[in-house]
Length: 273
Image (cartoon, rainbow, N blue to C red; front, top):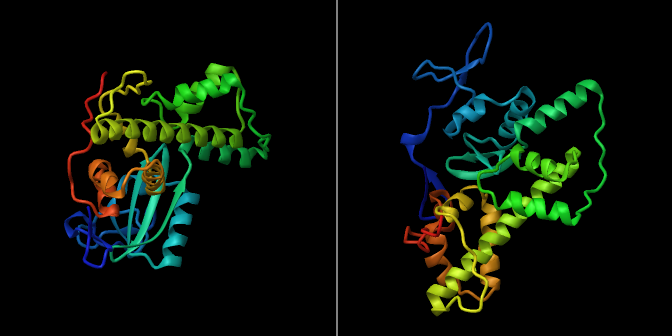
């Protein structure tokens, strides 16, 4: 769990940190282990994992090399990993201060790339043409909160009866994420108008969402996307103090820490099923 110190830097609770791994002689398998517990770990030497140890364990050989190289470059001694929007995101820190962050695509795309290299296959890079049918499928996929990762693309391919190239899939995922952020901003704006201005719904299109929509949607965003949401709400005329109290205070804990806000009650997340 990250905490903010007086200087504004995140600090990590020691009870959440695994001891640093050290390299030891071994005949096979992972050459790193925890010197205090004797257990093997998949962290680079000298790095403490405070979240997502299982995700580090599942890294492919090529992805693991990227992580080890970035650790060596930044001299990081702490790391965390989590899945966001189907992608693996890794953050490197040194003594609680963030140094670097990067991501890897979903495993199915990594597998597709590996098979393509092995078979010397070149994927077409033709630009995605957004037809009305594809636009409708993107919106439907974005608004189905149970669809994540490769299921999003599979849904669209089934809807339009077309297989997409790797680059086209990346563009589709970008458009889906963009639609989800737009929906979130519209919904928050609507609720802020109700709470701050006592605005009625009469004569206006009302956005209805399932229970837990705010929590589930924010849980899939990264810091840059959350910052976009807050900035765009401010651009719609909301004071920073209102955004802090009504929106930021109800974000997942990792974002509360990032934006230095005490936990308060967010817009009640009890919408219609």
